[in-house]
Image (cartoon, rainbow over all chains, first blue to last red):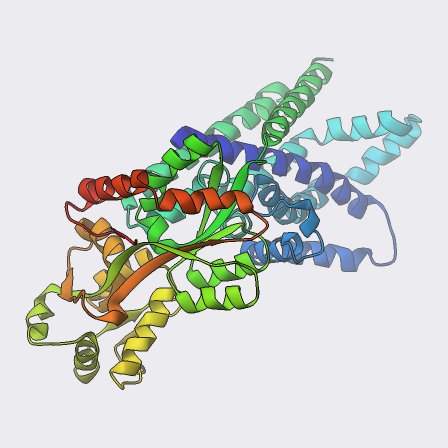
Length: 210
Length: 271
């Protein structure tokens, strides 16, 4: 039972963080470096969306994925896919925003790369290497949001035992039944997982590069 | 160069975790039928107790989405669930009229009861009907927790206020807007009265230390709580589930559930 819930939590949270980083980091870089017409406006939107209420994201995804909605044909409402989509929507602005503020001195880095005539793929690898620490921070933030989120995934996942029940929704369910000690236990497991993830990331980030 | 190596390992690790989880996700949901169900019969643990035997025998999996009756109907209407379990008949009649179901079957029942603070129990000794009990609560302006959601229990509660010829708008009336379990917790904390189904109450009773049954009557029509199952005509396979609900096996499981958790007959099989 518990093992299943923990596994489901990983299966939902890890891909959603990964996808969000895949989208958010380049988006943050783009907003930081490129100059275009509605840049300031876009940044403001990202700021706003980083505080998007999870229940609102859940509702929007629900409407989108419902059989009567535009993406109903996909038939993925009340599955982990729907939960991942919701979480990606919630995490992307956070990752973007963090990347945006994390790319300090990017101009001089870019200047150096121009000077050394580093082009194409190599240029981006160099940038990623330079800012790896910031990117890992962005991953940490994204993962924290993913793992602690409940409102959105409850709406689109439906808290189905053995498939869409993850730690946070299981906590809500136990509270609903008045089983506060079970809820507390699940909360402790959640914290332990979060601690493990952060330890791994910190080792990768700190010990390797300091 | 050390840095480069770490970077590559890091990327490889992330990609591996990602691919592994995604491939795990692709496990099929093919033979799974989604059933939108009202919270009370799910939160009591009843469905989880009686369903595995059916799933095993028929190689069908049922996934329950436990929400209030109102939301369950919405989910079913939108086609996001294949079947539905609720305890409000008027909703089902609507679905039938809209040709979204061919019919529905009653399979299990229990009773609504009025619970409230232990120290006020004596006041209800001479009460002869549930509407009289409700009127008494109103008269004394006692606290009363209402689900105030679109649930079957709430609809029943409003019916009783109507029978009592009372508007539920007095000072002690608390609108919870939550499911049965949470509303019971709220009533327990606030020392309030609440209309609930027997099963949810007795299942949670040891956590509700300040509450006790103040009025019950199995002969009153308005207090009868029947659960129905219906399914989309497109999902003909679910007729097997209807057959199961009529089977001897199901009946036996219901009585062992009663024995195990209540030590008395709470859920009754509907013939």
